[in-house]
Length: 96
Image (tube, rainbow, N blue to C red; front, side):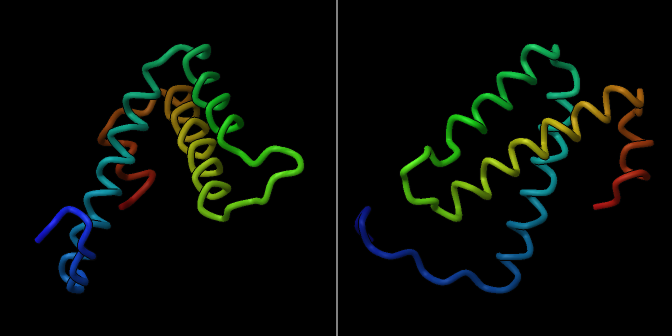
């Protein structure tokens, strides 16, 4: 298989496993972000604004969605930090 050949379709089991891994990574990222300073969280929000479409340019749905997800992750981290939740209480609060 060469580097430019199309990837084979994923099975349902592989898609489910991929989703589980993404959720796990999101939650780990939120935990790490919650330990950052407000300035560092602000940089994350700045990056979301940076990748958002500029005036006069065509919106790309995936980029718009990615920017929204970045903002959402920083907001969740801020809530986790403000609430002083531990990992175990966070799992109960935000079931996967």
